[in-house]
Length: 160
Image (cartoon, rainbow, N blue to C red; front, side):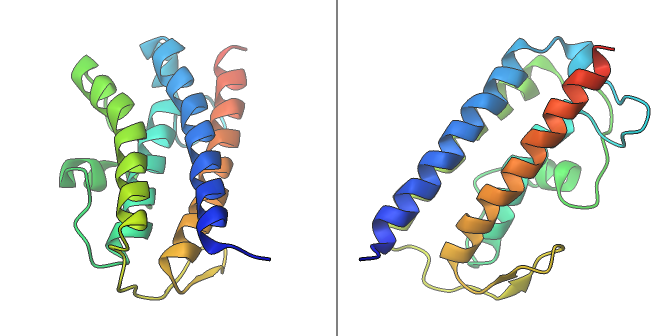
């Protein structure tokens, strides 16, 4: 029998595991490598990690009509359609490290307390329709996996 709460818990678990890997890249990649854009790529490891955090917030909170748990500076710099700009400060790296987990923890708490009562349907770029917050969380797992793959490819490319 399908239990929606257990399914959502599994999605949050997968996202947490993915974010642990992203955190590892963020903490263990030297800044010049973190921000390097190798030939054949149009972004870097840093941008991909920040983009994942921003996108999760826009999909889950933005489409639910709720405030995002990060500043508009993050959104403007890392939402869909942006490109890497400049070198992050140590403070920005530390803030992103915290946002990787705090945003997910807040989402889990807000979902458990049934805060997501409204949702504006949205068609994603890969033509996956989102009609509920559950759809948004599910799609986000896919989205974060795509960007982890990009980060892995970037990591290999910058070490050549």
